[in-house]
Image (cartoon, rainbow, N blue to C red; front, side, top):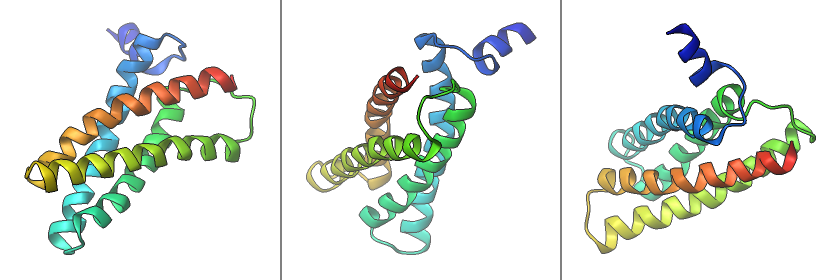
Length: 141
């Protein structure tokens, strides 16, 4: 059992399937931060849901970066940490744009509750983020 846990979550790997599983857990934690803070900013602090989304997505991005570096894409890279984070953040900003567009579309045009819209958009953006980050780490290894 310990060997399985180490293989799935601890030992470094370039195996895309294992990285996807790990990214699912990391992404789940980041999504809880993102969606939870969206609710807090919007319903508790009464900030418009689009502005709240930018704030909450940013917090989720930071959590995702830290955990992804530790557990998913933990290989040494050939560029500086600042350059790596900058590229990671650019991918995140594209994800934020997609997330915000989908959130607005599902909420304003399809008339879903903003939290339902957020869950749907988070799933879609999760796939974008994993694919783009996988390519990033392939390029900078």
